[in-house]
Image 1 (spheres, rainbow, N blue to C red):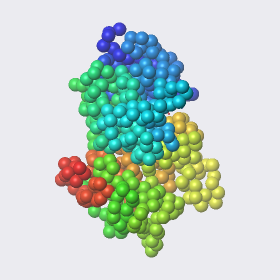
Image 2 (cartoon, protein in one colour):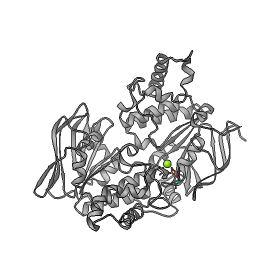
Image 3 (cartoon, protein in one colour):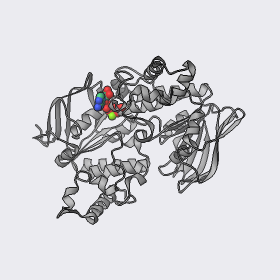
Image 4 (cartoon, rainbow, N blue to C red):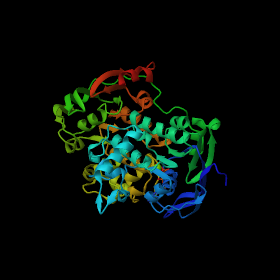
Length: 503
Ligand SMILES: Nc1ncnc2c1ncn2[C@@H]1O[C@H](COP(=O)(O)OP(=O)(O)OP(=O)(O)O)[C@@H](O)[C@H]1O
Ligand SMILES: [Mg+2]
């Protein structure tokens, strides 16, 4: 074995019941290498990385780490042996401090005579947070006080704690805005320079090409190819992932941003603590309204207020239907009046992991299903679920499979279909395509176009400028809790025009 090799995995197999998630996978990683791992939702990326990262065991396969046999028994054990992992789902423990999260499973080292030295623990935690470039997150904070992005950064800190030989980053950057991505890119460069290695999973092909030296493509649990830098292109990767040629651009082709004057949702002078102040928004019938901005600009929080999850300190949110004005005071009013909300933080708010796909999809639609038939028939439930599974090509055995068994992207599709099945009129989508493979992304954009054509109105909150430009009739840019600029859809509008109003 060459001494440059840091990790060697051979003949790795893993099945979950009838699902063969990995079939004879061979992956070797060298020192200094930044290896990308790509594939459609459900192709086996997280399964492979979680085996390497000690979170689960392979059915078969041999593993060498730094030329020694490697068989981690847990994530902490893997970390002690040199492999750290930032997992795809939110990996924090609720209700405890940032420091406790960072040292979870490894607190004994601070124990003396049965007491934990919290001063030292907090000092160490702050040191790591500072070291990775997030000094504003403090050790003593309770994890639940942090926003989505900062919680993810705490996981990064935990992964970096032990100075890993290999860092696994599973679909993390797309969950992060600019600040968090910057932190991760810096760490990747640091590891590369110090002859360590990175296994990097992402659905953003441009990002992958920028970051990685080599990219391995998985399809249905099988390694299809490993590309070197000079072999990488978006078209080649796409083709290898899906096994056939696909069309180039997937955004909407028209530049006609006109839509009806009829306002369907109106927010007047809404403010929420330090997040945003005196915001006015009017969403029109058949409009795709994009919200953009840097992390901390307040746009995610505005989405939550519009759906009634958080109550604004000042101002009102009103749904306007024909001759009715409905104040959105809480989510039950929103749901009852055909509003939908897809959360960025899908595990926490949007989905019941321990229920079946079918139950998750049909839950918000039960009133409609029961109205139609007088009672909810098993058949109507199954039909609705099956139609959605087909529409979004959710990779599963059938509608009865539990959502927790699905891959990350397929969970996201369940969230989406839950609201689509309900025939909502106003949809608030917070980062709807996060973690979704390009094939399905294309389907989602098509779907948004279809909804628009049927007079549905959509607010799309997004951290991807290309997506905002590609899909929105109108874009609102937020900065420091204020509306900084409005753009109408236009062929001449580019990322450059927008960025200047974000920073
Ligand atoms: N605990 C489990 N029980 C049953 N099936 C599982 C389990 N974990 C994963 N699978 C299945 O294994 C396959 C591979 O899943 P995996 O999570 O590795 O995909 P992925 O490539 O990471 O996808 P994504 O891009 O959506 O995150 C999928 O079909 C998934 O449903
Ligand atoms: Mg995954």
